[in-house]
Length: 353
Ligand code: PEP
Ligand code: MN
Image (cartoon, rainbow, N blue to C red; front, top):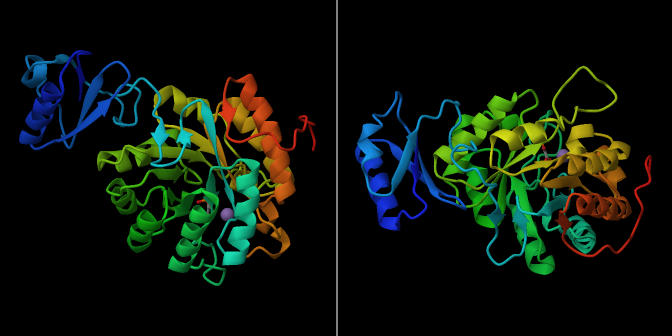
């Protein structure tokens, strides 16, 4: 159920409707839009009697939302969600593309600083890097834990980069919420519903990666879990799904980007690193993702990929990342979008490079 308020409804009108919803034992989600505020109702098993709200001051209409997801839907909010970060110019979901780059995992202070220096110079706004690594094998590098988060916080101070890093359970989520600017929920946890709810109670925006076999509806429902707990700052990320192909690690499903944008107001970015698993495919798929309308990219970059403790095979060398940024800038311009920073290494889009 969705209550659409009139454009001229006052804050007191909105508050009164929210109070009415809560008094019925449901949860009210007030979502301001460019034209008007919409109030989503969750927690109701069946339909809520619409007559309850029809006559309240400031109410324009009461709409039944037929889709299983409500708060992520464009029915609630027709205009795109734009996420902002206190004290930083980066936005996600607006005309400027967001670029997140860095190693798969934070391995040491030296490693993180060496990579951060290069990606910041190239125009990335976020340093990515796992302090907690969900690995297929329990014997593989599992991340530095809180030590890794401390290193990332130092990187923020030194280079002015925002920090995005993965939380794998309740305990790490609490720490990531304290240290980072954005909480990543990994593909393997996309349907870890208790973790999604915990992320919904966190203060920081959430980067939600698509599960390796998640349908569009499952992906949006995972975002709905987070929003239903009151955290409306969710960014979706297409990172490839598992298919029969064996020329790449995953198949980057770029068609999901316009499909999400049709149904949801949430931003969606692409991860061509996990989406291909192969260094030489990362840049072409990054170009394609921007062309298809992604709101940004998350890319693995390592200063010494041959010695990386995880995902070296899909990590770009810093020089390759510079070239990628130059190309992405040109493609973004065609679409009327911008990329932060200046084009230090102007390079034409050479197919096959
Ligand atoms: C990552 O970003 O390093 C990662 C583990 O991604 P995913 O959850 O998409 O596999
Ligand atoms: Mn990785």
